[in-house]
Image (cartoon, rainbow, N blue to C red; front, side, top):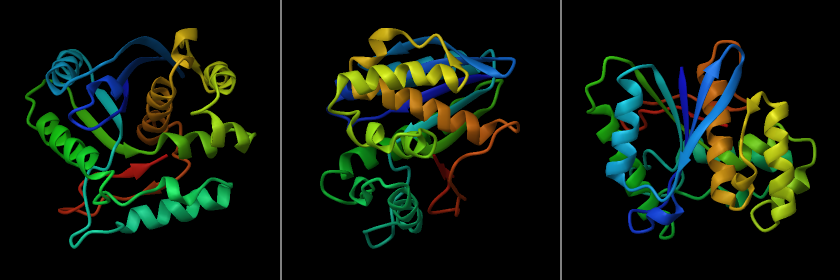
Length: 217
């Protein structure tokens, strides 16, 4: 089984997009490689290549649907409540139609539909994830979760912490940017969502047809 964590950015900012690839071996995930910047063609080609030889699970850090009429989805409200209880800032959960989110939502919706159109011999599983919440639900020190985007020393600690989560071989250079940490956390959330030996820290079920993907952390 192959796992991908995808920290997606808007369509005009491919430099902010990170794809990180792990392979499951036994009860562990082993780092394979990561790609950045990533445009849609590179992303789809990478996923198709993997799914031609193995099943792939992808955790995507981007809204994969929006609420009819705008504003929060029910899942956004539920996740905001969950992270607030953890001691995180609820403002980090933003409606998909909010002005600063709308281009990210557009790309997330487009890319999932393009992935669904791929014709591959192995299955591709898609789930929406929130990397910050995935870290906040598992790490002991909530302050590390609150400030890792601004603090390189915290990102270095999180990079080491991934080992304790059985995600092995994450390179030291992955701590240089918060986007790469987020992509790893997205892969962690997707792994615990898909693998029957684990369970997500938080899960909101899909509500087709308007909200066709589950949301987890």
